[in-house]
Image 1 (cartoon, rainbow, N blue to C red):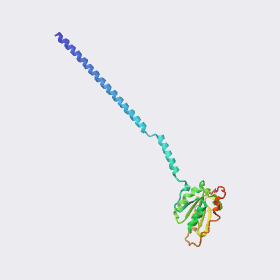
Image 2: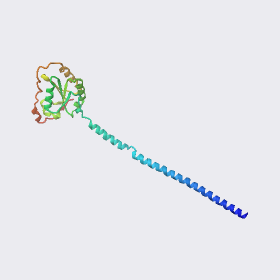
Image 3: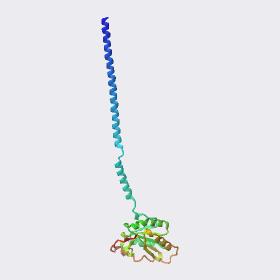
Length: 227
């Protein structure tokens, strides 16, 4: 009987030890799982941070790219004097081109604008001149850059910008005047006066005191801008 009691006591003690060991193992397993989950979560956060950092939008960089793109786009736009109102508006770069354009116009009314790229009045008036050329496709509009053609402009007595000459076939030069945006009605009145149907009665008279030799003449001083 005493032996049986000792055996039962020993087995109870072993059972308690086993239960305690099992409980400790369960706690250890839970702690390890928590740590594993924590590490995994931290790893995910770190990965997300790295991914987000790589692909995040940098406002400063995007702003810089926008500025560069805007600058390139602005550079590609033509200058105000390079725009044309239509096929009946022609840029003149030399005396020879000027004489050829007047000759080819035949009996059409030709309006010549003398302008400067630096002239504020020329720039203000130009959009309205383009609109007028679109409204009158039967009229030839010639644009003469004063700085590119100073000898010719000097011979044509151009001293103020913008300045206009009106030519027509056998009648030659009809009139000339300076004009600003505020006085644009002068151009409309001249068009109404000279743009009438008529029959040609002879060859073109000419363009005044312009000759091909003027291309090599010394440069004159800058013209004034009309107000």
